[in-house]
Length: 513
Image (tube, rainbow, N blue to C red; front, side, top):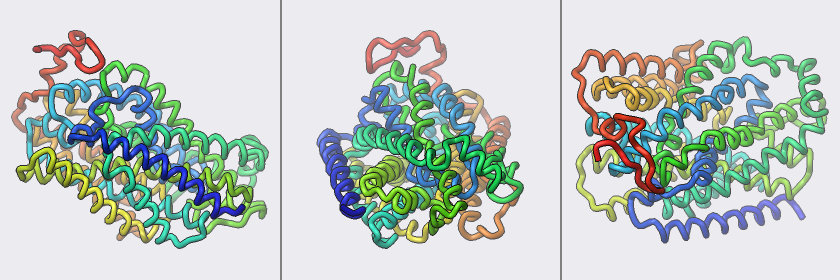
């Protein structure tokens, strides 16, 4: 039987599984807390698998293979090398404090937490909500583009049709079930990502003589692919090092689909082994780099025709080299899992930013919890439609869009979060200055360079996200030192680290109680 048949069968089975999970999650979603932070009930496996599935997006699966095919190791060094310590640092600095504060306050979103840290400052909350919308829309473009490439390649349908199919599938379970549906489905989706990553390496690398054969051939035909950076372009040394050493280490505090997951765990005991499990899952999830590089060798040798775009190399390999309809179906489901596990997080974050963080808590619009939950779901549909429309003109390199969105989050949020939790002297005015700088440089300039100024980027020769992160940090520190310090209620809960312990799965003993 052909590709289309197996692809359709695979997607039907996958959709049924997600729909059942979404239906169960929707029936168990009764409150805003359930919808946004899964009722603070997740164990280590749901946390780590859900967190890594959200990080390892469709843009990453297609993007790492695409940059492997088009640039070699430089993309991996830039985007992955410092991610492993970055994940551990985010757990170390953020996870326990955020969970402790969430136990004592109605903190369901990143703007919720930042507003509480900075004395319920509406400017901090409003800017945080705006920053989330900027980054989320950029991320959604990359996710839908990845799904569009795969569906159009395997099902032989138009890219536009593929985008709208992706949107329908995503809406079936996310809009009703919220974070509960997201984290439950992410567990299943992460398993699919690991399976396809390992399977593709097992199948493709032997075709080029394994890793040693791959490296030997590239050393002769494309030696720059083995270097950690290139002489010029998007992967020049300065840009790779700036992004890797600054954004790669700090971004995991900034990206809200990471930091808000720390609010969902049932107790701080869950966090003990979570960093190790997360790092292992992350390594398994970024294995598509080598199949992409193998595709480059096969194309150069004339064994395989070149794909229409670099990001299409994996479906192109499966369709034209292996001629395996079953493998194509598995791959389609894996990419769908990668796309949806990330896109669903951003739908939830975006809709919460519009309704809870901006309309309700910044503008002061009164609404009951039931009304709030209804409007969050409605806004999820709106954000979904906007994301689809913006992705109809696909980017050249999906991973570059992901890196811009990722870097924008780092520049906008990392200083306010990392310094805010660990430095009492940070003030609301400093946080506002840092957020504004991060939004202007890491967010707006980053997106403009990807679109309007793509041929002649602003701050050429620099990684805009890294520059934005540094400037945002400087502004937060300088303005904080120039303004009057104020106490924050979050420090009341962990003034003495050794004085709290966990009594049970839900409630820590916190000083002063």
